[in-house]
Length: 281
Ligand SMILES: [Zn+2]
Image (cartoon, rainbow, N blue to C red; front, side, top):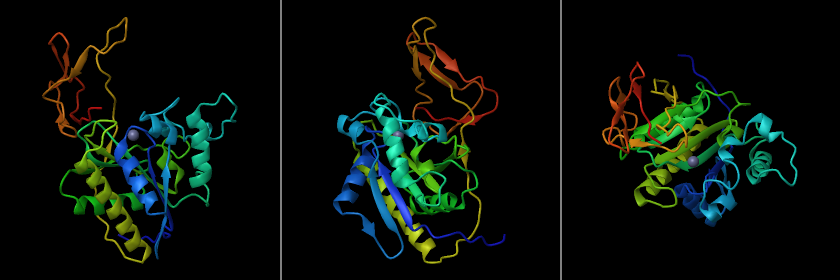
């Protein structure tokens, strides 16, 4: 394997509150902002509360999901008085942390999220050939033993990527669960804190010229989404996740395994053919 040299990550953004009711990132960013923006020998860390109005109201978003607003098309939409708040905010964040795809963009944007799913710590990357993201993932996986650490790849082009992390030259979302929205669990918060510290530690090592060994990493990707069973007329959900599947995120789901339990007590099984890892959100 030939060595690859990459430029240092001088400017790193740490974002929380992109979804206003996912509180670990909100707490972490607030704590970091109390300490003021950190400039060390090797890296400038900028902290951002991405959607302050949604955070104030403890809602995912006000008018439109902010983490779906960073496509090239939405970022270039002309703004008027009637433009949804999140589109205006996405353009502000793009000016602050980007512009996306430009030389002036942050070297790395790390965006902090929670999920109600029993996901453990999941790093989400947009590209399948981002060595920086894969090495950070390996560093976290090696050093965190309290919960599983995984990498989920979305394989989207920069123009089509709609998440905030895609504004940086490199982008990572850190998603940790299970945590109910609107609440903070101490174990989830301390794992997120540790994940961020380890990421910054890796960046400092990288920026000071450390050579990292290559290797293999396991990557998950989205193959398909299965919606809940719904009433054909009202479209209301008519079933819950089956108790045998609940909290078994990333376990292999095989043909015939229970998927849903209807409100009237019938089990619906997986008929998808090939076995897949499942994620219940
Ligand atoms: Zn989120």
